[in-house]
Image (cartoon, rainbow, N blue to C red):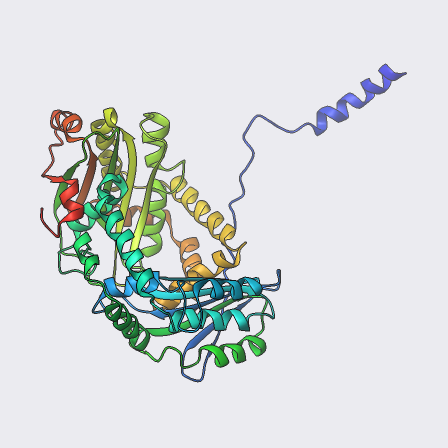
Length: 471
């Protein structure tokens, strides 16, 4: 009987078995559902964008002072000021301030970048007021203690003097010097001697300039309603930042031509390779196509750079391509790190892939894979308040419209493969290409010469970091 039952069930089992003759169909992910913020303003005109999310009892409030690299008369003084923002205020010692924040189960992150200074607050829903006042106290009334200033100044000077031991630091400094003139805000850099001249009055003056000129803006994401949060923001932050000046876009650097720069770093067993090309501004009509092309080049493990340098050749653990962007211009970057014995061969393959983006642009399948990857990463970002806030905070700092994150996703979804191919061919066919190699010259240069990749310039890594435009 058992055998007969099994025999009768066999056709049913065979009929229900899956078809394994072909790989399963992959359903493309939908575009991430970026919300549309509600837009308000405080009594002093400060714009406030609010995104309600009631899935967890938390609130994130990003308070921004929108600036720009070219705006401040003393960027180094302002940078020292922001480094001391959490080292005490005019009203309490640093530990007392932190204890008060901890008592509210809240966090405050203070900082400054090229586009904005910020005080980012996360607190329990309904208990934001105390954290907002503590953030205001640290941001607007910092103590700038002389002992803390001297300690930080010494740490910076020492770390800067030792920075030439870091290949990544040297690579970044070399690319900036190769791309940007000395009088460009992104081409300026500090040297250890600059820190010796930092005094408290200079730090105070630099921070006051930022507070009285930078344009304020506020982003709120989380378990809030406008009726609750707007009165709190009015009571705490309205009038705190009186500035209303709009930062001008940073100028694009002049053409560089083709440059291959070897930065000598004796004794290193790893070589860093990095390429920089001019890109399109964020508001350019072809910006979505540019983003898809860059992702196809080096935005995932299945991208061209990783397929070649990692999977096929085994030269590296990973290679990346991304877009450095500022209001008004951008730069395409591609970078990897390889063993010194692979330096010349890996550089050849990096150049091959850059050239191939122009001569054989991404196929429809590559474009679709890039789009799917961007959609998946965008959807993951929405899982956290910080991730959900990021594109809107960037839009605020750049003076963009509140619907920009959603509009960008819609543009990515609508961009056709042929548009990506045309944009990639034009961008990667540019005659302006800077390649920086950071490694041991004695071991690298003979192989470069043999491969027909002789450097157009050879720089000394220590002078690059320690001297101003000395090379």
